[in-house]
Image 1 (tube, rainbow, N blue to C red):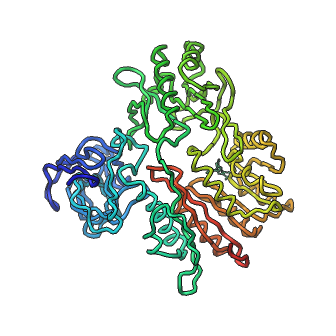
Image 2 (image 1 turned 90 degrees about the vertical axis):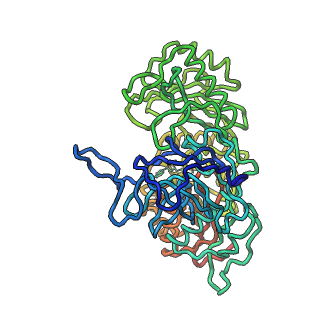
Length: 560
Ligand SMILES: C[S@@+](CC[C@H](N)C(=O)[O-])C[C@H]1O[C@@H](n2cnc3c(N)ncnc32)[C@H](O)[C@@H]1O
């Protein structure tokens, strides 16, 4: 096979359950749109952690067989791919057993080698594409050649081998499936909505299911016209390689660092900055951090680029306070990095995968850089949470403001407000906005950003939203609209309970995890709210991350 479905030239193809290879490596070598797939360490086949047994010396080893499981580790199997997991793995079935097949896409028939097995599912790696299959979603040719040369090893992207139009369609479907399965919500349109052209933003008009039942309208995902080079922040682990200091990315499923100078989802300015910092560190013999023994100095290079102002920030995360030749290092960075206005150091001496330590100081220049989204300026400090895709952030926040339907008279609560980004968008259209966030530094940024923009009707409080909101309730604050933008685990149950007591007219729910969104929508529906519509927005093209914003109204409220 060739073309968009890949240049498959598999050797050693074994049909059915023929070849067994206990090491779990593919015996065939196959190429598809994303490069060689046979053998080697590729894209982290971490396996099902439940599937470990002890060997004769009590060491933990992965089981290769399991009672009741119809496949064994190393076995090659043919399977049809019927879906995609949130990690971008194809979902296949063999004799009723579920296999998550890395690199396989819905609608395809593949030959896969089983990498690990567990009681309820196993993991496998595609070694050969056998056919495009009969899946409807494959009609447009969903497999494409990933443009990134390191896609095979890098753990950063999961969907580059899928056409962008199909990624958008899949992200919407992922939302729909979660709303139906976990949220027990009726989605309007069903198959006919799926069949629409991806990116089609027409209104669906009729929101009933045809039998008079009101359903949730899930729009097509809002994608990017050019879904590359969008990230405004790079966080690069530094380590030791063949030639000395290297910095790039962690190989999928491992802690090994692969040196990298180009990443197609990063803004080019970030690539240049990282390259310049690595070169300067090599020149001055700054030691790279060794994760195995905790020695060495430079752990991470974190860089930001504010596209609206051209300003750049460099943060050197170090294993200790003293940086040898610190002034020369700063001098080289200033000389080589156009637009750099801030060089900071963050000290992290802990043995931890967490990037930042507690102490941050300015080595040269400003303590923040400035960016602008939707006409609002933001000061961004080294550790601020700031959305990484500015173009899509404006669309996401714009949708949140649209759903809030503000007239200028409303009281709004923005829970999980971070550095006050959504709050400040809302404040322009509301009487008063109350933002709450658990990280004190983020609230300092929020206050600073309000001042910077002359916004005086936004009030910010530090603390868990589930504790602060009841306090506000006791103080007599009555919100007309509540906006929530929680982390992946979703809203705290106590916060949902307070929202139901406060009974705002509208709730706008911004979510980065469709399954917790669906869970929380169910709780809100049971508490007297109706989910009117959901808009997925592609904040992270080529990755499995799915972002969406939902509008709920109090049951007695007229639908917009
Ligand atoms: C997805 S971010 C949203 C930030 C902000 N809305 C934005 O768009 O930049 C979630 C935020 O919730 C904060 N957070 C996590 N748990 C919290 C809690 N229990 N109460 C308040 N904020 C919390 C995190 O620190 C983070 O800033």
